[in-house]
Length: 302
Image (cartoon, rainbow, N blue to C red; front, side, top):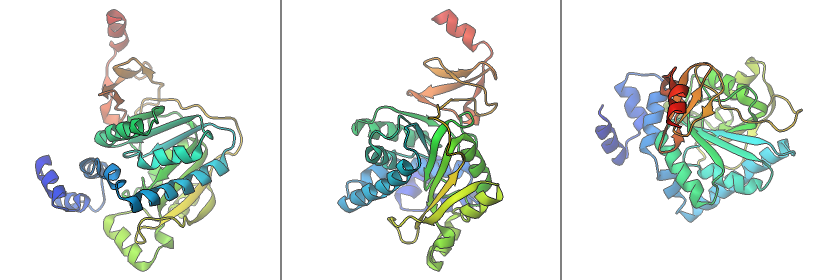
């Protein structure tokens, strides 16, 4: 289906993930389906904050997240929100956390949502967040890059692919992986039916345990905007020891360190350049370009 037709369908109120699954005869939401569906929604999350009731609920939700994060790490450090979307959750979490953390990063599969996030955070005077386009399955960071990696309904549409996402997010977390995701096994039958129909993740606690991860909390959060999509809190402890972690960007394909050259990030070890689109680094696997002469050309034009 042509993107213009999809946009028209979205404007009619159709569920784009359902539409694309039928179009592609897919039993699950692929990354392309998720990227397209969420990209078409860009702006809707910021616009929703104009509703005072929703705005207040978002503040309470972010405060609950902040309470968990600050209760886990008391010596500062770094925080990543994969699937940051438009930054509406992150901005309120940062505000609620105060000076508890020194560095915040966020990435999303949709460039448009990252661009909207950048604009929203600037309007909230939150200009020190590193944002990029990236995938949950191939995060552009070295092992143990963040004291806390937390998700806010980020894994949600990836039913059936819980294990690879958990592995990847656990890899880049240094101390804790904290999930605020649909609580399928803690939900009502009506909520479970909806989650099944929409292809949501489930059984995250059991998947984590099966991977040898240490789950220290798993319960309903108690703050949710939709009773049919209750948020469960799952805290996975990787290591409670060690000082603040330092985020380190790497090539999503080979894991080599990335160096920022202004218009692109380059990994000398893997000879791959990752471009920036309107200043936003695009760091997905498919964004990397083999560019063995990149540094030579950069030196020549410097």
